[in-house]
Amino acid sequence: MSTAHPAPASAQRIRLHELSARRGGALALDRVTCALPAGAVTAIVGGNGSGKSTMLEVLAGVLEPSGGRVDGLPASRALVVQRSESDDRLPLTGRQAVAMGLWRERGLLAPLGADGRRRIDAALAAVGMEGLAERQLPAMSGGQRQRVLVAQGLVQRAPLLLLDEPAAAADAEGRDRIDEALAAAAAVGATVVLATHDRESLARADRAILLERGRLVAEGAPEEVAREQAARAAASLAPAARAVQREAQRAGGPVELRTTSSGT
Ligand SMILES: Nc1ncnc2c1ncn2[C@@H]1O[C@H](COP(=O)(O)OP(=O)(O)OP(=O)(O)O)[C@@H](O)[C@H]1O
Image (tube, rainbow, N blue to C red; front, side):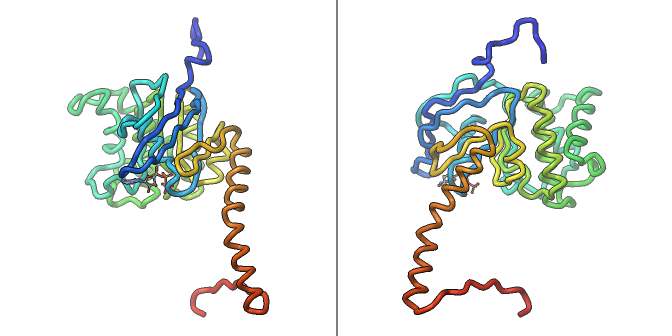
């Protein structure tokens, strides 16, 4: 995107300074400091309960931070929640669900107009759901509903797009479509931040941050962050592996770990 007076790079970053947040009385995000560049996809990775959703919710403004601050947050932000957090039984078509993404911008009762319809069509097509636009959500598979949720986020064209495990229920093709759509949103200037457990999605991101028990423990290129995550996982498993080994020695022989197949 070219402008006559491009903003300095520093102004195009959202910056978190010592950001903390509590959940159920406990610290779920612990003094996180990092930058989220515009025009890029940033992946947040980390184990279950490491604080990924908490960070997204603070950035979306649905959870109050308990400390620190965020600079450069745009007023308009789109949050795509985990599918488990959304109501799958709503009697809405895919198109109607995506149209809900325009409510905040246009109001509940305003007619969509040709531009609104074009945006909805484009968002549905971006996630490969144009063929199921008129199907009701309860009649869709989990992965299809997931894609509709992502389309609802995309249609908003918000400068900050936050997604919580957007490909969790999607098949490989769905995940690829979602990743491509997120890259396209970043290519036109959005700051895209997604929490993910998916290694492919991590590899395709422009950069990544790794959370552990609410703290930022690595930040950088996706492959570096993936290596750090693997190293930390191996280190945390090592004591358990040594305990198994010790147990085997006490029992007087090697322990053979077997996997069982169904029906045997
Ligand atoms: N509603 C809640 N009430 C109390 N504690 C919560 C609540 N939601 C999350 N937590 C706790 O906050 C911490 C961070 O949770 P969060 O959902 O941010 O993790 P996450 O990294 O997104 O995990 P996952 O990969 O499982 O989605 C965890 O210790 C979790 O148990």
